[in-house]
Image (cartoon, rainbow, N blue to C red; front, side, top):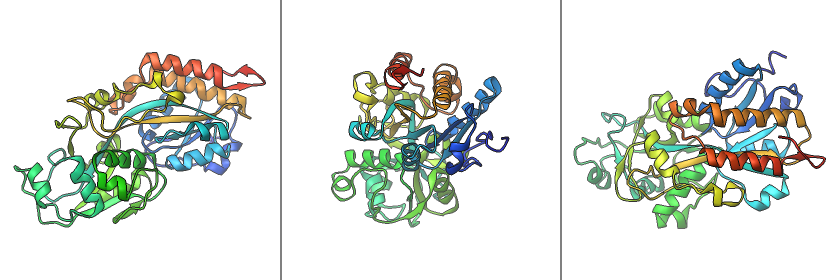
Amino acid sequence: MSFIRKIVGGAAVVAVSVSLAGAAFAADISGAGSSFINPVFAKWSVQYKKKTDIALNYQSIGSGGGIKAVEAKTVTFGATDKPLSDEDLTKNGLTQFPMIMGGIVPIYNIDGVKPGELILDGKTLADIFLGKITKWNDPAIVALNPKLKLPEQAIVVVHRSDGSGTTFNFTNYLSKVSADWKDKIGSDSAVEWPLGLGAKGSEGVANTVKQTAGAIGYNEFAYAIQNKISFARMVNHDGKVVKPSLESFAAAAANADFAGAKNFHVIITDQPGAKSWPIAASTWVLIHTSPEDVDSTKEALKFFSWAYKSGKSTAKSLDYVAIPDNIVKLVEESWKKNITKDGKAIY
């Protein structure tokens, strides 16, 4: 029992495997998916365990893996940074709701360039990942960074090798700012990368960039901070240079009209606003509308409700943007309507 009740202690995958999740005790909460949300889930789980003695058993296996796990009913909930379509939700008997918002940042390992010194815009970033720009002293990068001494160092692109909501949001942004990227590559949780090194999970991308001279990748901001990796500033939709921060993520998130969207389906990349971070993202929780394990589902909903209300300061400390109270109210109302057993609301 103590093995199954083990909580995530950091960014690594928890000890129990997905195949064992169904054997967890009813009081425990099992979930899998998005690595974007993992840093804050890890902190929340420790706090919630102290408060309730209920363990959150969450595996950071990527959004694609989380979707598969919840569809297979091997976990109580999945977490994804790419919302499911209405059709897929209905087909699999699922409902979804937003859990957190934050930012994805370009991360780099460039000789002599400190965190936050490099400035990139969307077109230049797309051209790097397309393989059009291959050296760090390329004229396009130099034009954005006239005060930096950029080395004649080869660029090594690092990307996710697994199905990833972070990849979906990153490529969604590139598709909005680069017609070339949109036509040749497109946006999805897994794409045909033109070049580069593949790494599994946000942890894998972070470690590969950190260990590879000249590398560039993309990560959740929390991972960049935790792993002490250099991150770029960006030119946003309004042409302003912004740095990744709670303020710039919140500015982008302010445009998220979850209340007006069916199934809370809103993408917040490339948002207008002088202070908006251009690669902002959300994480959604996926849970069955008619769950087989009612007790575990009920405990999961209690945890989510606690996180919305009591986990805000923790989220803020990690530079995530909490879901606004008015949207939380809509989410909890959706639970009463959509998550039932034998016609009765579970929450």
